[in-house]
Length: 165
Length: 155
Image 1: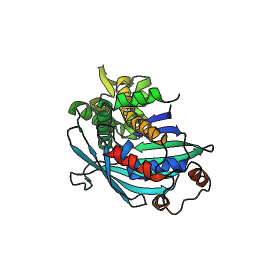
Image 2 (image 1 turned 180 degrees about the vertical axis):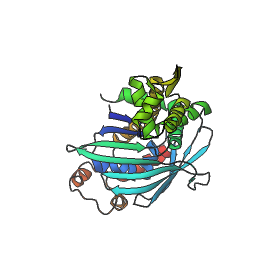
Image 3 (image 1 turned 90 degrees about the vertical axis):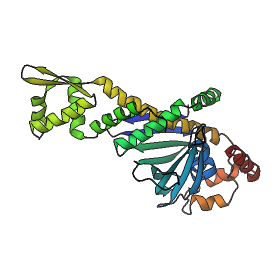
Image 4 (image 1 turned 180 degrees about the horizontal axis):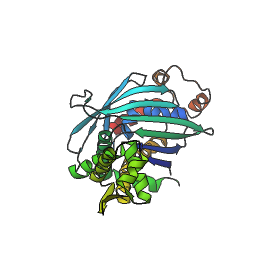
């Protein structure tokens, strides 16, 4: 299994999920730093992401949209807070209107990514998602439900079945 | 997003109720045993009315139930509602698990940027470790084919 630990903190409205990859931190970093790789995993297969802008520097921003099965587009953005290549990335994750402009009426989430080398050629990645408010949680839950309902599940299961234990 | 309003509104009440430290403590106390509102009021540096208000918010979110016994209002935590919070966090974990599984699939492929010098610019100038430099070149391979492959997938 790739995911090695999931910590839920219901009181802090936060989730920390750790996973281990057979690749060094520099390589794992690139799935965040390369927009073409990022858009292959950010959205579920039924809502693939297209990255528009990608400036992974403190104060920089990433903008993207996800395209649904009906051609519906859902825009989102990151505001980058901390970058420490290839170990730490912290950004605010928010929603945008149909023209891609940040919609600040909608809530945001803070995502902290930490990559730690595990031996010579493996990485432990910890992602901590913190929800500053119940509204933010509500939004993320709705996205979780989209993921849960999509046929992505079948594909994930297929992936897991084919993956070495 | 495609979502049923009901559960989301319920989730909102749940998280709003748990966003306050006093209310979280009241839930914790009443999960292990029934307490009257006046008992609870004695434990917190606030008025009976203030505690009563917190209990009302928790009751509205379904996190506690209240019953009258004589002149007292007895409050009991609802373990099912807390399980609901856990279930919602599980949904979020599922979102990230999906992403992590897709990351793993990408990482199992050859890295399209392995031999691309422009990548080091993008990754930042303060790249510190020499620990990673060796592995970059060790499994370096032509970048062009991989990049074309990536574009295809995207389309």
